[in-house]
Image 1 (spheres, one colour):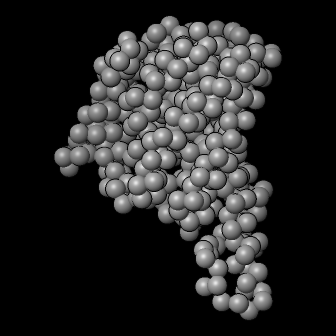
Image 2: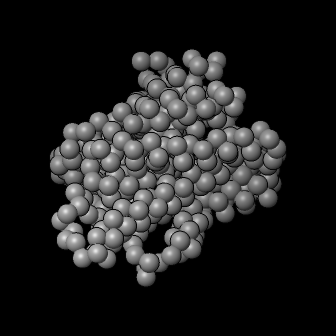
Image 3: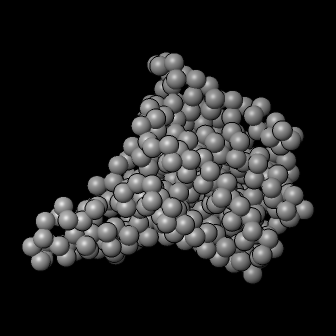
Length: 342
């Protein structure tokens, strides 16, 4: 294991994550009250947004910012499209759409953890990457809705001609025309609280600049590492609890949850090489592409695709992919980027 990987496993925040997994596995009553866990999540998003805004104020807005953002948006479409093409051969189309959406979106905590490790190794990344995280949330959700409506169409045509639904191999229903329209779900994507806080903090950091950074340093700088460790402790407990759901998933879905991040990160690295991203930005693009959403996207999918099984798309992302990325993925992506990009 390289120095970065060893530092990752010995990082206090990661060790608290492992403590949480241990506590959850042995059925300890250790838990973070839900309101406090929510506060910690909001704090991390605000702090990351502010840090990104301060960095963006220093670097400015130019082509060097636009290119990484476009690369991130491209990956936000590539990952779920490839995922759906694979997953529909493993599970039913509706659950395939939900899992593809979860993996096509991003994990804010994985991103935050990656930024901490980069900073610990003096690898300066662009502040605009925080904005990229926001942009990468929405495409996967919209694609899932498109797939769900297409899945429903054969069922609707059968009903129109009076044929029994059993004449189709798989019948899945999705939001019908009388339900919320595209405008509703697009608004849901962009007004979701976590995304609004992150983007708002980014703008505030950008506008306030160095003055704002000096004022907020005790909040967004000095406290950050301890708050991250506290939050990862809770995430470890949640991972242990969700692993019971993962055990019921088919083996091929396990394989996707563990191998998929490698593939997605590899594609992101190739794209980073094409557009000539610096190593730290390339690492964050890989981390975002390899992660899976277990907060924002599942919250939307519960209402947009209620027929999909949350135990599958939430269990895989939180029970397998999240701990894999936190413990092993981040140092591996750094090593890949350093070897490929120098």
